[in-house]
Length: 153
View 1 (cartoon, one colour):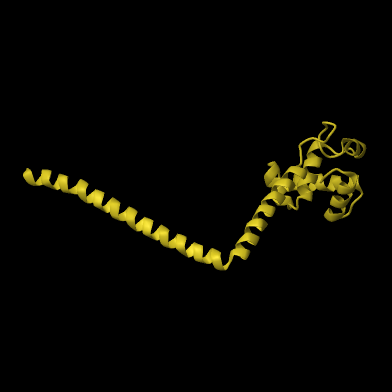
View 2 (cartoon, helix red, strand yellow):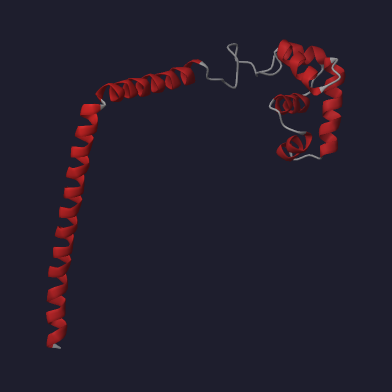
């Protein structure tokens, strides 16, 4: 019984010694890294300054771009995107407009079908009707005409 209490007394002291030793090693490594950084900064100060300025301008450009070119779900008049007047004039349904948007996004028929939860044959039918309504013979021609009319971005 006496050995167990003696062992219990040793473990906390040993643990404390290990923690102090670990902290001392970490502090020494941190000091060495700081000294190495100081030496590096002394010899490469111009490159570091240019890098910092470049990183700041990159962050500023990304922030400004995200603010300036943000797309909204509605246009300035509060209408749904996609030139509703042209959609009505051509007789493009909501589903066909959705397919047209995915088509403009570069998706294949199978990918569009999976995304909309319909069969690939249904997608082919929608695309064929879009070709008729837009007066196109190919996908690229249909997308180009749709962009000219403001139906897709």
